[in-house]
Image (cartoon, rainbow, N blue to C red; front, side, top):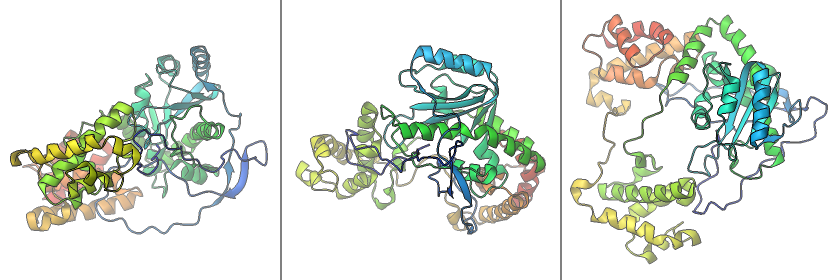
Length: 460
């Protein structure tokens, strides 16, 4: 969803919310369209797996087409549903509607610790668009009952399904417009880019990084939110036709089913290792200091429901771990720690550093993450030349197969599966054996049928 602002040293989260240009500019006609070049959108972050098998070839970006930009919902901005009586009326209208239901959710990533939804948008033929405030209405099961078995249409569904489920909204059937765009090999799959290319209508995305926990919600934010679901149903129809024509409609159905069936990701063993800049620390004792600062920061952030980076940015964590101040004066002399808010809790930070300093050597963290993570592929030639050779053959085969089918290589098959298979292939690695291995790892049937013969040849 939103990426939020840059890290701040304000532990109380009282920075002003960022604002963008006015999304409610006067339209030139009743459709709410103004003629202008489609903007370079601030896209929802694409929820793809980490990268591809090799550095992608440089893509030459064509100039954005000149398209009309929709600045106001066609039926006007719906009233914000914030009372139980209004929610019951909305549920009745949705139940009386027909066809799929477009949904979206807005969070406050970068501002809040939690990933809860602060606004839910939906649209259905016969019911129109609706905006629901889940702060006073945290239980939306009545709306879930009204939707029933109808297909949900979302863009980048796996970003929003968890926060919607927390409200009692769980799809039985799904169509993901972003994932459909990937399967079709579209060069840009953000919502605004896809509405422009498929429907010839642009959307402004200036509020995607807003603090949606703000109350009351500004009027132009509500315009933006309503527009996020305005075109999803129309875009779904275009995508279905294109997927069918490309012979990929069944692939898409398998992918959507996999998104629905995916379990929540397991908690990370060492989440503190995600601190940006941790590679600057060269000794286990320094890593221990970063770990203790991370834990202290996480405790404060969770208690206050503030994004950790707004309590203490990663760069300050790494700086303190590297410099190892031993007094409040030394600590507050460092950047960020000298700010008013962090001076007030300097004892918390110093105590974290002291805990790290007191640890016996046996309890210090390892310099690299433990567990089943594979070594970087760039090191395979030295560590295991045979594995490097298998990976090189598999990489070339996957890239060629993806190019032939006009889709990103990471959507043809998870790069992690390719790495794991080539690093430690099953004892028997004929085509049937590789098929079984891929099935057990959760690869979709269409992926297995294409890639199993290629991977079996690569690991032979």
